[in-house]
Structures are given as C-alpha cells and as structure tokens.
Amino acid sequence: MTATTANLLYLVFAFGGAGVYFLLPRGGRSNPIVGAILGLSTLVALLIVLGVGVIAPSPTTGCFYVLATIALFAAVRVVTHSRPVYSALYFVLVVVAVAALLLLQHAEFLAVALIIIYAGAILVTYLFVIMLAHAGGSSTYDRRAREPLLAVLAGFALMAAIAGRAGDLPAGQSPESARLAADVAYSSVFPDSNTMAIGATVMTKYVVALEIGGVLLLIAMVGAIALSRKQIPRGERPKPRVIGEIGKEVPPY
Amino acid sequence: MPGTSEYIVLGSILFALGLVGFVSRRNLIVMFLSTEVMFQGVIVNVVAFGRLHENLDGQAFALFLLVIAAVEAGLALGLVVLLHRRKSTLDSEAWATMRG
View 1 (cartoon, chains in turn blue, purple):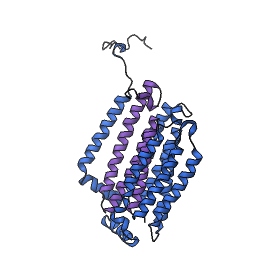
View 2: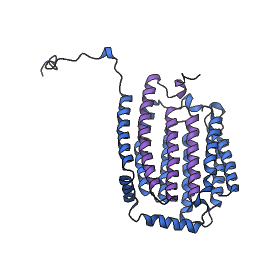
View 3: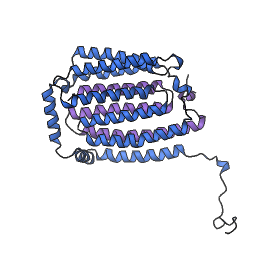
View 4: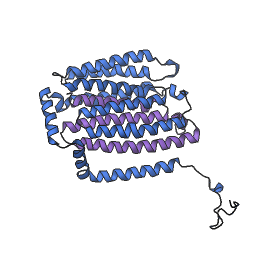
C-alpha cells in the first residue's frame, strides 16, 4: 500500500464518515437517502481502492470482497437503525460475514465458535432483553442520536490512524505468489486439523489464561445473578417459621 | 488471496463503526451491541496478524476474546435489566445525573 493508496483511503473514509453522519437517526433532521447514496458509493470506492493492490486474483479474492461488503453494510445498519431488534438482527449478519472471513484465513474452529457463541448465545440474550425491556416501536431516544458529528469525527480519525499504517506490514508489499506460498506454508506448519492445533496451543502455551478465563466466566455468572435478583427490603422479609410447624396451618387433605 | 493489510483495514473500519455507535446512540442495548461490533473488528485483526506471523497465537487470543465478549454481554445485560427496572427507560441520558 503506497502513500497514494493511503491518501485515497483517507478520502474514502471522509466520504464514509459523512454517509454515517447522515444515516444516524437525528430526530426529524436525518437524511437517510443522502446517507445511503454516500454510504454505497463509499463501499464501492473502498472496494476499488483495496482491490487495485491485488494483482493476480485468486478464487478467494472475490469471496473476501463480497464478505467484507456484507460485513460493512450490516455494521452500518447495526449502528444506524432506529429499532433495536433490527440492529440485533443485522448484527447476526455481521457475525456470519466475519465467520466466513475467518474461514478464508484458515481459522475454521474460530469461525464455528464465533457463530455458536455469538449468533447462538449472546444474540439470544440480547433479543431476550430487548423483548423484556422494549414495548414495541422506536422511542424518542432511538430516533435522536447524541452528538453524531463529534462521534463520527472521533471514529473516523481513529480508523484513519489504524488503517493508514496497515500498508507498513510486510505482507502488504509481498507479491501475490509470495502470499500464496505463505498460505501453503501456513497450512503445512499445522498439518493436523485447525481444531487440534488450537487445542494444543491453548492447553500448553496458554493454559493459565484458559484457567483464568474459566474463573472469569464463573465470576460473571455470579455477578449477573447478583445484579438481576429481586431486592427485598429488610423489614418486609417474612418471619422464619419454626421447624416442625411448617404446613400445619393447612388442613390435611 | 487478499493480504493482511486488507483485513486490517476491514477490522479498523468495523472497530470505528462500533465506536461511533457506542458514543452516539442513546439506547443502552444498542450501545452494547456496538461494543460487540468493535469485538468483531478486533477478532478480524488478531486472526489476520496470526496468519501474518504464521502461528496460532492470534487465533488463541481471539478465543479468549470470545470469553471476554460473553462475560461482557452477561454482565452488561444484567446491568441493563437492573437500570430498566429502576427508571423503566433504556435512555442512557436518564442516568446523566453526574454531568457537571
């Protein structure tokens, strides 16, 4: 990625920022059509800028761009949709696209785990809370974003700072044949299945982190139960009954 | 096969979109959904770096990220339920009492 490409990326990011700004719900003043046009043209421009660097397209090139498009579109909709249920459903689309991208990167176990944990467990929890807490329709606070301009400026400055440095990576400059050779080497380093290789890594190199992760999950479970239990004031607690007297006030069947 | 730079760019865009959502949306649930989008960006990044260095550290790290995401979702949604029970609204502005 040369300096020209980086500058082009910054330009594309600026357009994308404007698109997200127009798409964010801003009460009566939002302009979704302008935002949609800006956002779609930004996506196309981004794909062109990223795609120019690829000289010899391989079968997976097209897959990457299609999946990246899906992920970005769905992420924009998660952030900008005014109804939380639709945000959650678009997030499923983000997860599926990211899982497919992980498959392209030879991370099969992680792709499946992502779908099971995110789309299967976390999203269901989110949907439950949305159903519990949300009584239909979009409320005023869903239709008015808070400081959309400042948020977009901060987000896109951060993005430019990260993505502008992406060109300094060694793989960014290597030609296509070297990349393919690196892929072959990568899969030959771990000849067994990806799941077995990850299991070996996690159970040997990262076994302490694994144990800490388990403890963390336990703490989170206890914390979530403690947070969401029903609070009973001290005075209203029913008097404990004498053992042996329980059930005696009810006439026998 | 697109190289690491493309994945880094994609991950950074996902992360920035999540940040924009977290800062600008007022619904507590959507705010936490935005953090999950940020997690997706980070996962794309660490797996791409793992492939760049040809080892499995990136994927192991992403696995622990999944654990953290599950913990965060559980605790955050417990908090959201608690806050919703107190004021029966999901608006984060309702809790701006410490604003100067």
